[in-house]
Image 1: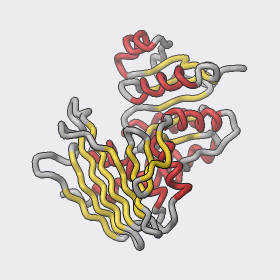
Image 2: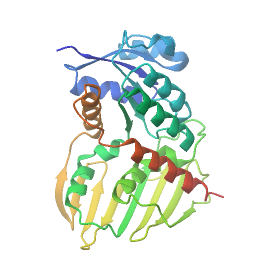
Image 3: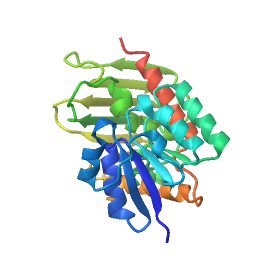
Length: 295
């Protein structure tokens, strides 16, 4: 079997995780042939044991079959559009881009070139989330979630909404695809918007309350969903555990491996994306709507 040759652009965080999971799960099918990582490419490549690309021009169909883009969102559009034009199937970390206009350009290029692209909303590949969607009785009535990260190193340039809350917003969008009617946003006074946000989103038939924090506070990552039959589902994101009315339905699994499986199959032409570009665009729009209420 010929291995899928992959280039990874950006390896400070998610790029490195993608390489690790590819090696653990898909070593027989894929090979990371090189990385491009700002000014530290050579040092990072040596650490990861992979080759080096000195610039974007070196990443072509002649030496790669696919590309993973794991840079900050502000760079997504320019890089993704160029890779798609070269016919390279693209795995793009979330959010799709920094604005709706940039997302539109990515989608337009993907459609024009016919090149596969997947936006990495990893939690949508969480086995607990997949099982929830199969079991839940619509319409959803209530969603409550909190997500805390202690990864607070360095100065942050974007709010906590596209940085962290987007994981939960992507699940909300998949369960409640209609536009929200009202949004209210607040935060704890000791933090700025890059560190904390609490959001209430009102839909025609549902209410959503989400909280996200990047701070030195107790770690929490869960979501509770009430369906039309008043069943209460709880997802523990650490354990990838789904319970229904207190009874465990499922636990375990690897979200990132599931996402990569979908992308590999897409690159080989055997599968459609589990998370569509339209859904990824809706997540960016929802982030923008929330940020408009930040004062």
